Image (cartoon, rainbow, N blue to C red; front, side, top):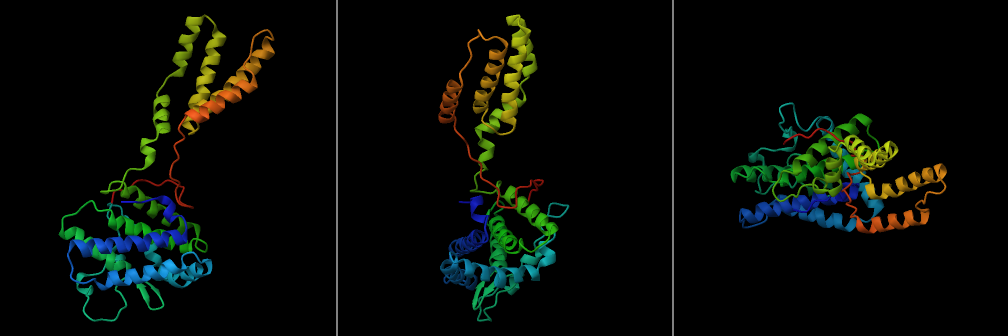
Length: 314
């Protein structure tokens, strides 16, 4: 299952993610249940998707969608969106998003969906109907690790957040950030969703390795072997700075060039007869380091979601 944090950083991107996820979840149910005809909630989602595809690159149309379609939904469910998505017992508080089975029917009826939905003129995006359908489907088939419910919630919460963040208070911002972070953390344990690249990051491996290394003891050993206390101090200084660079997420080999340059400068001041490493050589080494070391890029959090929150199991 494809998921990229870049998709939900903007209003247009998060709405696109929401619509696509709703259709994927709807088609998943439709195909697995071998339905004879498409249910209304899937047809409505596909029509809304076609409409959104026509306007998603037009700033003025997106602003209108934000003001007239998504902000009113937030205002209708403001107290729910400003509450924690998970209670003290680690239970998801999503009753305001679910509807009873008896209310979901495809018999001839008014086209207005049940529960939470988005309306653009005569088009509807029936979030609660699809969300309730996927929960019921997973329950009836004994599926406990499906990503669809969480992906739907991520699409919903990021779309609403990006629609209202410009005018809402800092408290509302913090609540949305916390709830979205909970969803992102819970997503990693779902079937078909790879773990975040940070966990396999080679720089993290270096950080863990260097963090447990006692360079003070190694420096003392260096002094005993060489009989030069000054050499021991400089050795400890060099590796101390490299360790600090690693802890800060920097490339330690790039820092080495600066360290060599500083040490050489001091040596030249203290003893002019001692050969030093020239600046040109340092630059050359640094360039070689940049070519040889793999710079692992981490997926950034969506704009405004940088702050870490505690991991909660859904």
